[in-house]
Length: 138
Image (cartoon, rainbow, N blue to C red; front, side, top):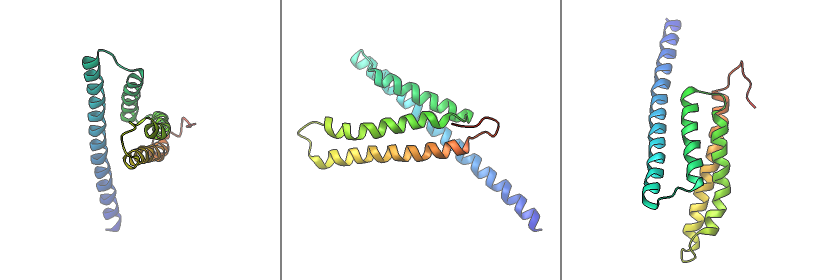
């Protein structure tokens, strides 16, 4: 009876994990579509697209593809994002308009830095989760 309960419990856990995975993939695809739509809007409105936007769109799209394929290299793309967020945090504070008070600039920089740190942690989680025993990660 206990063995049967454990088997059913494992099946239930697998179903729950599959449901969460589907929600994450749906949100990720929505984010990719939103990023591309923003770039198209910028291109139509300003008739130019900054290199930074092109690179970010390519990184977002490649992360989505690698995440869906569960590639062992997925974490590298997310780590690149994390590093750019952490580098951009103090630059956002410095480049803000001078009429904006220091508190909102500091809060924005702190939030961007926190997103960067969270991305580093999640990229390490992805490294472990998608690790393949046949192909070692970096």
